[in-house]
Image (tube, rainbow, N blue to C red; front, top):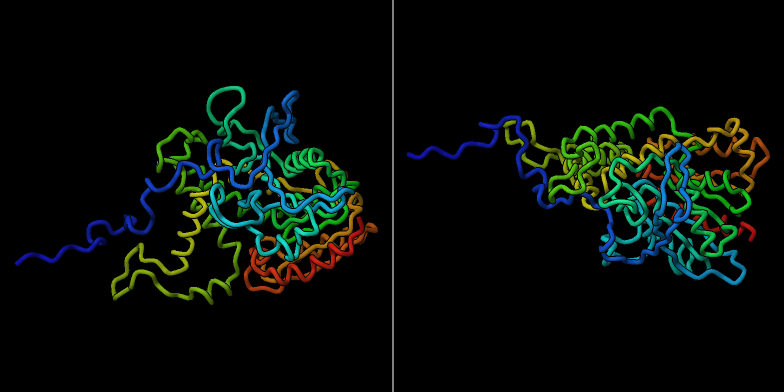
Length: 409
């Protein structure tokens, strides 16, 4: 009689079964957009060609390209422009369908467009891929202008303020002297706040969603844990991985970093209601190390999804920029920074946000009002956690539309 085939766990009780993750050969070394890839709706601007772009933290860049997209038309007066700033793993494709160059629809497609909350029949909308990003703007995956190859780890640390300075140059090139409004959520909210402090005369109204005046200790703890997950991946190679073969990049570390952050993006109620304790592989009376619950499969999916469209070095760079975010730095304190915000401010918090809790937006409003500014608070009542500003579009619109209407040209 032939023995029955052995069970996977008999010989390999702790080894991860190969069916849990996609084969490495299906994952790119980097998910960055690179020259030669489909353009999609991207537009580009070169800057710092004749002189270096000196960064807040002391680094320098020269001859860099910044990517952006636009919707609608700028009116003759040039006073109907709205800047929308993206979050950590967003990009310039804030609206529009998926297609060549854009693997998914715009990250705020339900908010931006004809007849939508940010009505492109009325407003001229601009979204810029941040400096240090990986979807068309200069970042670690970009080719160096002075020698063959990519920047890799030689790309210097950037700050939110550095990102805003590149956006100001885009505004100049587009003929926008003053934004009707600057709008952003999460890391995008940090950019919006810096716009109001750095260029108060150029911001007509300010919308900051699920963000903060300065990164807290817990926020730094979350993002630094993700960075370490990438750094511990042996295929990260200290940031020198762009010449590796397909499947031989730091996709495991990047996926793990995303899984860690994904836990902070949603609430306990959402995880419990959606997944409960449902298993993927049946327990069937035998417990094995890598039997998964449904919530684990969800995290696996989001980790791999990000590895296909993002760059590990950019993830390191942008999370560091978020940790460095502090309106008070070098400005004589937070109160002095708040005094520079002359534009009316609408701050939105989310009831279930554990990453950027609503108290931070309430504190922002209180701080601006204390120094004589105009700030109002709107709370999004949603179980979806930090990501609610990308999901609860009706609640966002209910506060955003009248605020944009009220703001004076």
